[in-house]
Length: 245
Image (tube, rainbow, N blue to C red; front, top):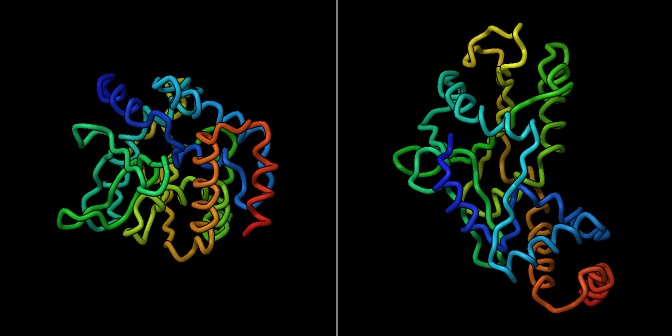
């Protein structure tokens, strides 16, 4: 588990930043900016003005994910599916990794690095599966490529954000992990049982124009927060900018 001092420093480092984990809240690049985006931008604006981080309130699924991430990474090491060292970005460094970009107040915190010879060769994102999704995702009758496409659609915004922060990295892995939940007394299998994980690999090329479009949306929202204009009117300004371009 992450100690509170490390978590506190991580929250402080992210003050006022749009993050990859919340990138979906900016909406679809090039499309209308709605209330969800406005609410998120007000949150970031408050952080910048007050210099105080937003202390996350974790839902039960999110808490399960945080608790089980170390086990998921250990499962991945035991599976021998990847060649290299699987390094936790939370546990294996003095501070939780937060990588900002140099073109906006935007950054990301990958779950893990795949390292070879001391160099980062790929990013790894871990998602614990809870709820009814597990029945479909771990079904042997659903083709792997169908699962791969569905998982990409579900998490493409965050994966895009992670790769935006690491432009030199060509590959990102997404591990879907079935955690052992204490409340389920019937689940007696080891957390490292082979059935608990499915690994998906995505190359930078598969994201197509998402990097360009997402970066443009991030830059626009980042500047607008500090513009002094009414965030409730941001869609009007977006339309004007699109016409100018």
